[in-house]
Image (cartoon, rainbow, N blue to C red; front, side):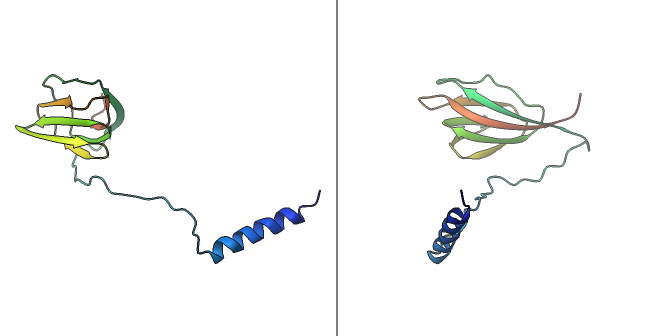
Length: 122
């Protein structure tokens, strides 16, 4: 079997796409959070965790080892921290400072978050 028909097809497809002004797909990048963080130690462990909060879940008052960003994959959560309360939805990012906090799932389904932590090695 000759490769010539296949090569001709590929060349025509490339020329047709170029003639129509089609461009190669490129990844999209959207900055979701930028914040300066100055760790007390030069060496840190990085943890990335996926949290699934059941419908109706409300965490007890708690703290985290270190501050860090949280990304809401799905749902709506209310975060109370440092005497302030705010609601975050799908695609939003927020920063938890390490103060006493409580998180509640406000949605009718599970809420999912990605939690990023920078902690001192043990």
